[in-house]
Image (cartoon, rainbow, N blue to C red; front, top):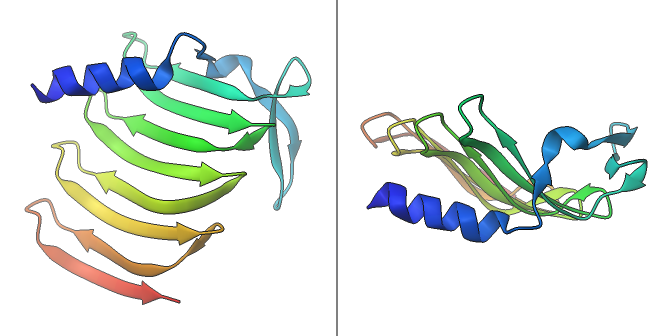
Length: 135
């Protein structure tokens, strides 16, 4: 059931307008600015990277060349590795990291690209072993 739900999510999230991320390249790459483009123009839309077996490795979104929207990374077994969101190039909101088994590994929160709130790390059994509050 979990794989079915994941498969449906992938199809809905990627949509038919998704392209191969390998077609994109950096137009500008500095410490403060990363602009991704297609054919030399800032890219807006979705893209995906695939494993050699054809399964989705990651799905990403861009707006005018900046990281924007939901980003999801997958393990080869199809389980989610990392999921989070960007807003005009900066991490925002909840970012979740998982073990290959599907259990939560880390919970992080961002605002305007900076870590905020309570961050937590869990061991493979699901037990909390680290926590830190960011201002």
